[in-house]
Image (cartoon, rainbow, N blue to C red; front, side, top):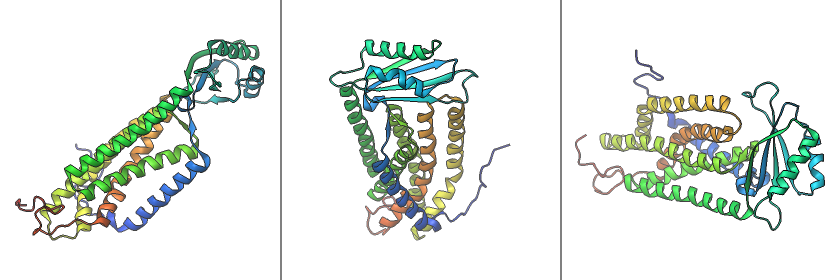
Length: 321
């Protein structure tokens, strides 16, 4: 028996909501940018520089006591957060101590780390330190630059590829959808103050690849249908193309989301931010493939005049449908 998420033949009018969905996307992007500028991102040590010490104990985490013990060391901005995770065994209490990069030093010295650990052990003798991560200010600045270059380069490469594979209208629509996905992802990370680090950048690059794959599948079917239905209005051809690829889209996105949901619940707090970014990206990427990329192509229009041999959407007009 074959699993069917949608009927074999569907004729749903996806594009009838194009004005509302496109308007909602624009508002969501503006809101994301506003939140980013006002609230800012919760950068991890990768981007800020400094040291993160992970602690574990059988006793409950007392953030105030931890802070009081570390304060005499004069380390500047020290952030202490308790880590909650449903996969933790009963009696396992985890916290993260984040120490800002010290002036004039590439990283927090081993002596300083040892002093912090000793201070915390005066509060809780059973405390252990399973991991310590340090990044210098110079390295963190280079990481920010490299991350921005990686995202920008991927967008430019995709723009060029879509332009060659299809036409410039399709290229603009695809890039608009990708920018939409990236901006909304950054916005939700800012709004929820989820830690933003190199793993998040890796997730954003994954989102870009996943989203463009879904967009290209629909664009490819759209191009085929533009050849078959030369006189059908463009909006109707778009609806047909989305309906014909709907089963594939739901099956691919659905199975991916199920796997990501399992990782988000059971994978632990270390990878939760990374998995959440991809989970959110798959949702908005599937949405933007239909309601952003196609909207932009529809607004730009496609020249389908068969008398123009190089016209977009009709470059294969002489092929028998």
